Every structure is written in C-alpha cells, then in structure tokens.
Image (cartoon, rainbow, N blue to C red; front, side):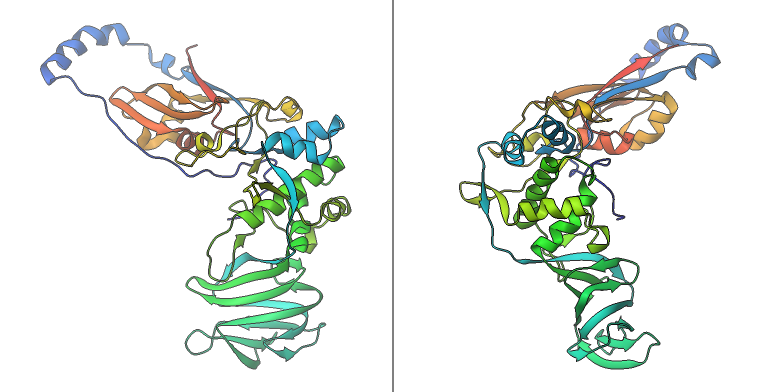
Length: 395
C-alpha cells in the first residue's frame, strides 16, 4: 500500500458483511402487479438520466479517538496538548514509557535491496561512501551481502543487519535513522527499519499532520503517535509496524521537519495511559463535529471507556467538516455492484452510532434488499466517512 497522509485520507476500518434478500411474491401475483404498475411507472427515456443520488456527509476517517483537525482547532484557541488529549481520550492520564526500538516494514522486495551510508553490514566493516546490496540469492533462501556490482562479500543467514554511519540510505525508500534489516520472508525480502522509538516518532508526525500546524497540535500528535505505536502492532515476519495507514504513515529521516522534531523532543517519552496501561490512541482526519464510540466506529469491537464519542466543536476548520457527493443512478449501481439487487431505489439507514455514523443500512433495489455496514458503503461509494445521508433527486 502506498504511503498516504491521514489528514486527507481515512484509515480503513474492518468491514462487516451480511446480506439478506426480501421475501418474494408468487409469480402469478407478481405478473398481475406488474400489469397494473408498469404503465404508471413508465417514464420517457430521457428522464432516467436525470435521476441522481445526493450524499451529504460530515468528516473524514473512521471517527474514533482524536480528530486531527479538531486538535488543530483547539490549539488555535490556546489549548495545550494535555488538554487536547484529555478531551479525545476520556478518563486517561499522561504517563511515561521507557524508550525502546520498533521495527517498521518499509517494503517487500522480490530478491534484493541496495543501501549506502553504512559502517557495518552482516558483521563486516563496510565503507559509508559505497553502495552495497542485500540479496536473497543464497542456497535455502539465505541473504547475502554483495557489492553494488553484484560481487559477493559474505553469507548472512536468514537476515542482514546494517548499522548506519549517520542515517542509512535505502534505495527507493530514503534516509532512515537506526538500522536496516533485510530479512528472508515468505513474500520475498522484507526491508525493515529497526529504529529507536523517538526516531520513529520524528518520522511519523510530519507525515500525519502538516508541520505548519500550531505547536500544541503537533505535540498532541506526537503523544498519540507514540502511544499508538506501543499499544498496537502486528506479529509480522521481523516487524511490528507498517509504514503506511495500516499502522501510521512513517517517512523516516528524509521527511523530518524542524517543528515536528521539536514537538517530539518536547513530549519525549510521554504516552496516554488508562489505569496504568498505554492505550491505543486511534486518530483520524476530521470528525464533522462529533467523534464515535470505538465499538460503533469499528463494528464488532469492544467498548472502551477512553474511546467514547465526544463533541468536537472546533473541527469546522477542516475542509472536510461537511461535504456533498452527487452520483447518477447508473453510477451508484455500478459502484455498489453486487450490493444492489436490480435497479437501485434507495439506501435506508437502519442503525447509527452516537455521532451518528452509519452502522447498518439497507440497499433497496427492485429485486430485493441487502443489509450492509457503514464501512461497506464507504468503501463502495468512495465516501469520506460513514456519517452520511442519501437522497434521491428527480429532475
């Protein structure tokens, strides 16, 4: 997945799929009904093209935790990062966490990756000014250290670790603090950055929010990013975090900015805790005016006292606070695909959250009804959030 900036794009939520079809009338009754209704429903050929669906919505993203634009609004009004975090993560306290290293997957290569500005690789001394290669070409899928011209230097076993002379430069990725680890994996060669936690945070903040934002908003983002990294993670092949929106967007040292580095330094080690435990501090772009309970924003999840819906009065600064989309009926039917049975008649919202984002809805077609989740609608119709209403317009 390509790296994307979450102040303009939402993190995906896990879909919940359930399909049902309405009970159908016997054929004889349907035939009689059709004979009566068809003359009444017939319209000129040009009218159908003028039937549209208007979608009015609010916010951008899943809606759980801290609204980044809301935090911006609070900071513009003089709120400090502690107050901002306390607002979005109810009943929590700021604490400290021991500095540690994290392992971030940068990419998966088919067989090799080039790097430079290293002083050691595969246990060998190397020259920072030269380019080297980690190659998955040994027997039994072992990783080899090679020169840039392909000449073999050493066999490294299942992985190659390279220590930097400053920031290590990884071909096609950029410059990174910490070490490069090239690890043999089921999908090829996992290119991993093993980096001190604070170095990781410096590479996250400017990719999550603009560095021009108020200092207190940047500090709130720093603490949220640090807490999220420590409270979440995956059991990957040699890594805990992705460098994109599956975890947090991370661009390494190449993306660092002075203002965001200062925000990381001012909050070094600070995390959000609930009853002593570091909490998963979800965040997203824009709330539209209210955040959502975690169990409703991520259907199937468990309620958490620190991830409750709260009013977000200053999110109005967001360009996505309110938005509108308009699609023709044929475009809606095409985008919905198998979720609509027959000709699309309407989308009826049947369950909402607190905000109120869509939890469940029915896609009503001429052939039946399909029960869908808000996330299914968001994905199918390219909605900015699940806080949306649908209206059929005839012109």
